[in-house]
Length: 258
Image (tube, rainbow, N blue to C red; front, side):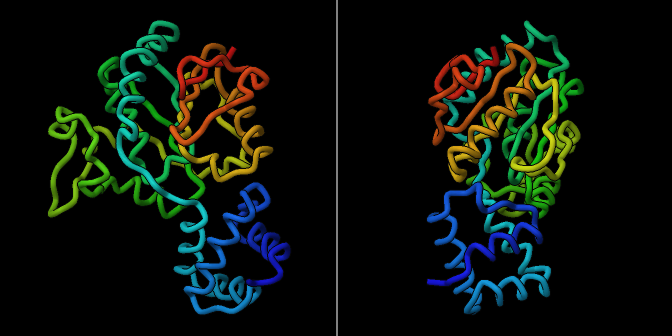
């Protein structure tokens, strides 16, 4: 059991702008202690020095903190609801130039899935997705657009055939899809949020945050959306107090701004 976690949180914030106070402490501390031990370092201070001096280890730490698990069309039945119900409603209400934000987009599976799904409703050259994440490394991976077979397992066959090229055991997503997504670095707990969004997708991310941090994020999402805009959350999440946060529940994982 390592001591000095309070100081460590401050050191991490000054190094990375990641505020560990917003994460569930027990869970996060356990994960960090495991990583420090794995790197054969015996104290928080020594580990801070270690990642200051080694760029690769610093990136490993940020990557580890930001918990990147992603796949295309994750929970396909929810994407089916998006396709059959949500996109038609949004296009009818706001037209074809929808502003869509994929928040905490990880390795790009989600924003690229959004482009493919929306292409059934809107000409592909009219689609533009803003995709953000705190982790530079995963954004670089996302821009590269190279995925393993497991990541793309749930992609509908028509899109797999049309938009992916097999390279060895990996799959490269086409430039036609890539061009529709703009990747940017963004910290959900600290940076200003985009405005005028018609759809925000943020899935299986806030489960790692405290209740206070979650409420703050959902409030800011609500402010980012236009009236009747939609928030799409993950299957591991629920917003119990959605009415207080100015949302109407549209379906289990879809919330409409009032």
